Length: 155
Image (cartoon, rainbow, N blue to C red; front, side, top):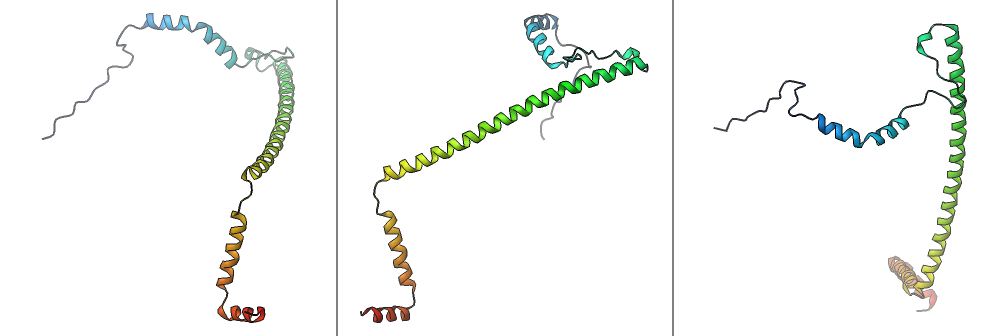
């Protein structure tokens, strides 16, 4: 008979196995500077560069609130349009750099091919391969054509 398997049952939710406030306090104290820097980067700003602040939600439903929302959205749209133009300029620059790198790579490939030819020197492999193909083609011809060729050539 197989041994009985024991199962581990979890305890009630929310019950801590040990006292950890001292550990979390020391960890949070050492990371406080990194947390503030990370949180400032991660949270979106509610103020546009034009200085138009997002209206408070307390005034929702009033004409003043709607007017402020229009101003805020227009300012945000113009900011994003400027960011888009800057990114398009970066894309254009990157495309020029890519084209330049491809052209330079082609030039270096041509140089590498020329140097490989010079380093190879004279070789009989090319003419040998051509002669071998010619010989195979001649042997593959039917015998009638061979005899006709030999009779014409005077063999």
